Length: 485
Ligand code: ADP
Ligand code: GLC
Image 1 (spheres, rainbow, N blue to C red):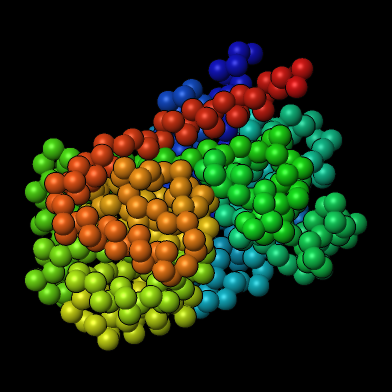
Image 2: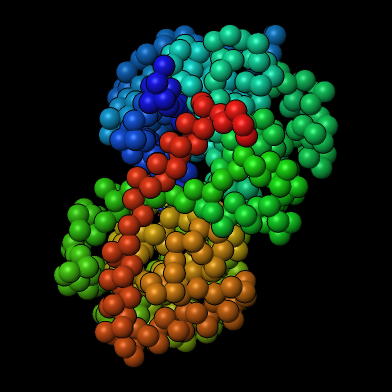
């Protein structure tokens, strides 16, 4: 069998993917990787849970009954549906008692208590699907939700001939989320209490599902080169840095790409006017529309407008904004923010806007279309993350001519260079403020240099083809290991 044919069957196992279900960047990645991988000669399919928001009537039933045995005495009846998007087949594991819920992982700020079951069953269902299809040679898993795939494969299915040669790659999109549960879940997941030891799934008295994946997966990667180094340090290793250092020979960093079919001001249907590096005139129309949408004064049109789109999570560094909110308000400009998450930050942003309704605009919620309009209408995009595995919005911002101001961490550091944006290193309000002020000053004092900076960013290419080529070579190495290595 030729290498091309071997590489040809990859199953992406993910808890979310665009355009079907999204809470963050993982969905963008899982939804965008398929088409360029196909161009690199791989035959890719995706499997994910069938959540409530994914309308069953639009899906095709493919496996009416796929039983998933969690333990000797406990099974789940699942069925599998499919749909196609951009030439990629998506499989949906349907199990209403587990996935037919209002949200994906949390409800009203609290994790669903049975998340270990929901994603344990999903991981097993993905393996059963691979067995049923007979073709996948690599199961490419993402984050803690699918980290049990390699664990089950290497333990329960180790001697199952149909699965013995299946390889696994686990992508770490965020080490801050590890899937931590009580010890008792090991038995419920059919893994056995014997795995509760520090060489396996035990982690400071808890069961850590991600740790299991990090130990058992054949290869690991994370979503930027810098983050792949940072997670091997105690500062950003979240207690797993020792293990990651031990496995560094199988760990790589692959910078995410941008799906320019979705994120490009030349043809973005969500924005007031299209524009390009050659003709920037539409950007002003986008800014005017955005100011109006947020009820901000028209007089802000000539002043710098700062945009923020984010999960409101401590990872994203909003405490730095809180710290210097007074100084930011004092800038002769405006700020718009869209986000949802931690009630503390939701309240902070709401109160900030209520106190300065003419220059601070805030929307609490998840609104993809508005996210596009903020990218297009803002002049500056602010991402003060404490850590950032990759981050997508800085790359979207570059394409939209919205100059990013970022903390130099993870993928923010890799994607933004100082000819196209502003970076600060110290995780302090003052360091962030000084970078914002530098951007504001350049915007106000030297429009020509500002436009040059915008154009440089707009011309940069982060298309998925580059990342897909790197993933394809990891798959290839998995299937054809170097006998001398
Ligand atoms: P993360 O995955 O850590 O949230 P990323 O920068 O990788 O960060 O990806 C975030 C994605 O989610 C981007 O596509 C961004 O536009 C989108 N997003 C985040 N918050 C919102 C929101 N409140 N409304 C709409 N889109 C959002
Ligand atoms: C995670 C990270 C983010 C990354 C995304 C997609 O949610 O927080 O930095 O861009 O995954 O890989």
